[in-house]
Amino acid sequence: MVTDQIADLLTRIRNALIAGHPSVTVPASRKKERILDLLVREGYLASFEQAEDASGKPVLKAQLRYDKRGGPVIREITRISSPGKRIYVNKDSIPKHKGGLGLVVVSTSRGLLSDSEARREGVGGELVCSVF
Image (cartoon, rainbow, N blue to C red; front, side):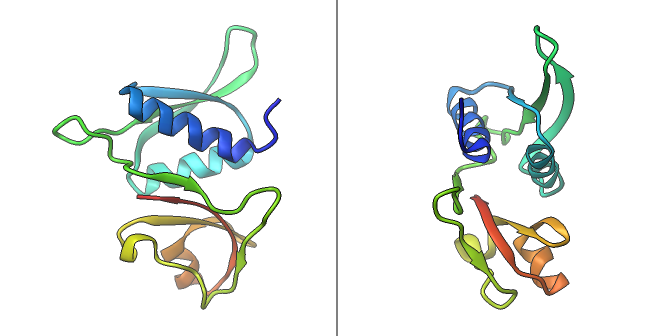
């Protein structure tokens, strides 16, 4: 059993991109669904949908994006906060990943937001992951 579901999601996406797969399937959860939705809104994934695996368990199937040359749109995706070491920031300390070119996912009282959305809303929270 996997103890860190978010790290598992990010690892599955990273491995699928390295292997050149068109999509990746992960066990479903609300938090994973919100992370995938944010990645779709920010343009890092093409889309995602809810489905069921062969045993009838709910899964999320994400369609990965590649650039015109066939390279993955996501170059780097890493977990920041972990179950053993939670990292929280206030609204003034939200980092810009790669000078603002990347994305930091922040879990706030208003849901999962990108770093720019959290700054605009004036809320801090837990740093979930970074994407470039």
